[in-house]
Image (cartoon, rainbow, N blue to C red; front, side):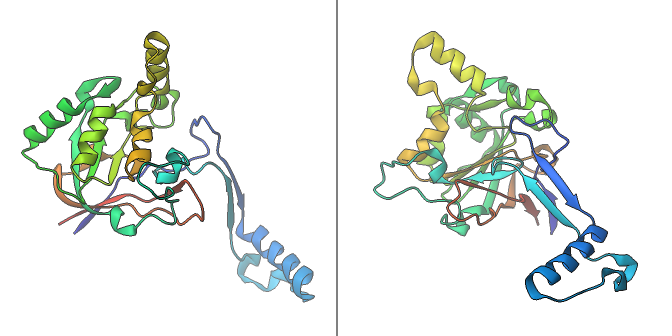
Length: 257
């Protein structure tokens, strides 16, 4: 079995709309810190120089949103009210079974910036000769990951419109992933369309669909074009268990027989 990494990194040196800070306590600093903690909490004097090279453990402290890097959006991310009779699940409440299953990659790269509709998704599935089944995890290859770390990553990609999202959910899909910043269209596209038409339904339809039916999105995947086949592999993307969180970071991988 091959394991192919489909995750984008959390990188404090890359451009982000919400900047990331990453502070590193070196092993030498960690040794001195441990000495201070021992004295403060336990009244024990400990000389860090007795350790090999005077070093102990490094510590990384990061400040970032749960939507940085590859992450899973929980139903709670889409709003507080639902149409299915129960409160929306936070990321620590979503069944882990949702994030391990057959993967299928749909190629959206020729669609350009904006959205694709249900007919586009049907044509792509016909091209692949693939029929969706409940439990499948659909991954959208938009090609946007080539812009990762730059402002274009947040403006130049394609997402799903309301009909495309409904089509996938009707097929029993509980998890939709993308290598773009969002499963919806870029913010400027949606807002410009709304300003021109006054149609509120063009605003984040893929996200708001999660109020009608519980499902998760995986955003900011990477390297979908490196998979040797568009289906016939297992996709795994377990989110970090953040209590009461609307999203959680994840290491997404494809398991290739």
